Amino acid sequence: MNAKSSPERGRVNREIAQKSGFTEIKLIARSDQDIQEIENMRYEQLQRFIQQQPENAQLAPPVRRAVQEALALKGSSQYVTTHGAMSRIITTMMDHGMTAQVVPAVRIYSACFPTSLSYVLKSFPGKVHNYLCRHANASSVVAWTERHPNWGDRIITSVLDGTFDGVLYQMRTAVGAMTLNQPVLTMLRRLKDDARGINAGAQEQAQQILDKAPETLIQSPRQWDADCNALRAFILYFLLADLEKRYGDMACGERTFQIPFYEWQRELAEMPATGIVSFKDDSELAKEYDYGLCIGWRYDQWEQFFYQVALGAVYLLNPRIAPVGTLKISALEPGMAIRYAEEMLGKYLPYTGRALVDSPVGTGNMFDRAYRAARKLPDNLLRQIREEFGSFGSITDPVRFADMTSDFLTPDEARLLSSDFRYS
Image (cartoon, rainbow, N blue to C red; front, side):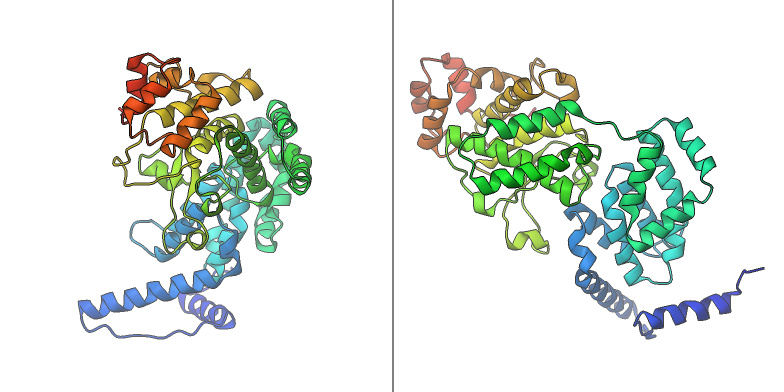
């Protein structure tokens, strides 16, 4: 038998830790205050060590935070197993298509707890199996795994040597889970071709992104890697270029993070909508950016992403943030956001149903009412309104607004768009 006794396992684990450069120090806690101080010191040292790892920069903002929390919870009574928190994070990444995050997350975990890696990876092939079944016919996946009995070992090896994405790509190809999204690919090409006034360097870079798009579109838009990030930025770039040509420059362009991203913590906090966000002081993004566009977690298809980015791009013209439930904006701004998203959907993805993209049009709610009024205003007048009031969301003089829009809006519609927007 190969099973080791507890003393033997302890000796092996100590040797592995020492080879990784770790030094074990035992501290005596004489009071509850001592315990708390030691725990605080342990947490601060762990966070510092994580931030020093080169793989930390490869993680998406929400994954980075989740991994840090999982590492701090190692051995927590909240989980059945010692490594339950990290295992749950890996499951979440696989469930939601963020496969490129697995290798850097595992490497960080291994750097912090080198003796724990085998336990964390033991269940990983099962997570990959579930992932493949979601993207292909389950019987095809089962048949393929039966023909390749060592596939689980190959998966674990690929995580350790950094080739996991390539191996997963091969497996998806083998089980028939690589369907080209032709409508979205056509949309991307038209979006680039329709742009005017884009410099040659940006056009060349855009073409390079387009060349990779057929394979990138196979991934979830939530994926955080160089190609997927570039494609999300590509879409936002051309939409913002169009909006600026219509309505004037962004107010905070240099301080706006240009890659739309997802964050599952907002969904868990019952904030499912796409919105403008700021970055916490301890975030690396906070050093360079004040604002970013966070896409609602549930919008994980590229058609949904496109609609949400078009909507969010309008808010990025004049980004504002406030505690949940306290932000006051004029109804013209959300009306314009829906108007622009609907226009882009009709122009570039005309066969995509409104139900798929979660459009409010036709629901009769406040978004729908604001949209129906805002769509009556021509672009040249909307540019004048933004110049007059500073943004679509700050109509501070309802009388002036009513006068400017009297040829297109009824008094009730003008009053609606110049009033504070009610989300209920």
